[in-house]
Structure formats: C-alpha cells, structure tokens
Length: 284
Image 1: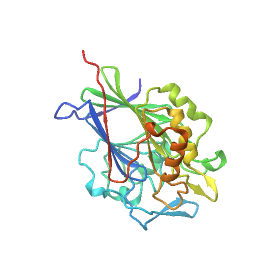
Image 2: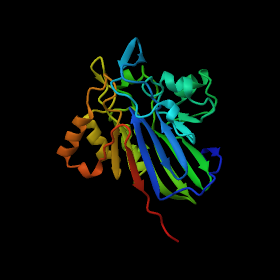
Image 3: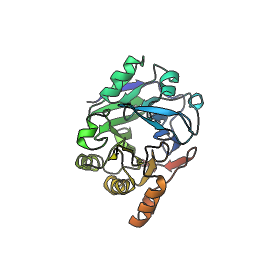
C-alpha cells in the first residue's frame, strides 16, 4: 500500500466533471481538479533575473510570470516539484511559500528543502506512489523515470522525477495526468505508457536546454517523440521560451508537430492562459 497524505475534506462536493490547467510560466502551472489545487515547479522570477544552475553556471529569465507568488490561490493543497533547480524552485518560492505546504518531490530536493525550513516534504523513489486523500477522491502521485541529460552529465545535476497523477473515486480512475519533468528521451521512459495507459493530459518540459553544448531537456524533435510515446489525449508543451539556456523555442515544436501530423493531439498555452478539460463520468 502506498503512503497516504490526508488533506482536510472540502466544504463542498468536488466537481469531478471539469478541471483546468493555468500556465504561469516556465514549468509552473496550477492544476485544479476534483477539489484539488496543485502547484508545479514554482518559479516567480521576472524578466532579467538570474538563477544559479550550479558549477558557476547561471541562466537569465526572458519572460515574466503570469502571476506573482502573492497572487497564488489560497487553497493550494500541495506542490509537485520535479527537481531542485533555480528555475523550478526559485528564491521567491523559497522565501514566500508556506513552510507547512506539502511538497511532493525527489529525495535530493526534500533534503535541500528541509534544510531551508520546509516541514512537509514527501520524497519519492522512481515508481513509488504517494496517495493524497481529500474527501471522496484519492490522488495517486507516482514518480516516473526522468534523466536530465546524457548519463555522465545527469549524475552531476539534481535528481529529477516525472509524475503520473491518477485521480480516483471508489477505485475508478477519473482522470490521469502526466508531468515529464526535465528529461531527455531515453529507454526507461517507454515503461511509463506501459504502466499507465490512457493518459488524458501530458505536460511536457521542452525548451532544448543546452549547457556547454549538451542537451539537458527535450528539444522540438524529442518533444514529438514524447507525444507519440506517452500517447496522451492532449499534450501541452511548457518550459520552452523562458530562459536563455532554452535553445529550442515553442515555435520549433509547433513546426515539428505540424510536420508529424499531430496537431489534433497538442494544445498550446501562453502565460496566463487556461486549458479547461471535461471528464466524462460513468453514470450508475
């Protein structure tokens, strides 16, 4: 049985038929569904700000977030953090987020966050699941493989995880989402659709991040490979144009999607836009 995080029951019945994904910028989104409000990879730096990537390397932000940290919804349930890097958990998040807000993440990130005073981290190994229970709905968060670049380089970078989010009621899966985390395409990813077929929405970290010429996140062509591999009803590219180390802009991905004939499988969000989805429920 997975570990369980119990959240307070909602005051009103959860809406199981509609949900939304609000794109803040970089890899930061706010996912709302089934009474849950989830924040991913909080990054609230502004245009011209710099983040440290380690080993003396920095990146400059080229965009502004759609909202600032003090505009986050007050009903956040937890943070889903793919890894501990400055463009995914920045100094603004470190200073301003509630120290008791649950954070589901890697062991490396959990250790670093605990050292910063965050008291509710929930680290996961690859393929480990945390069950988050809220009222009548269970949300299984499962850490999936991710590799932040070539093998030798990835060992020098923070541990990364992807995530599958499976919302369930009474044992029936209502909605299944996938967040890739910062990864390149590699063999271990093939197990994800085998373990979790029928993904409804996939959030793909793209951008073609390059440091010293080495590819650390998926570029346009790898993004198309991932669309085909995960085979979600809808894939949404994020983490594309926000930092100067991102060398493969969203426009490249759009062109690659068109060449591949996959336009009907992909949706695009600008910062501040919301993707709304409907979930057909079985009627008894």
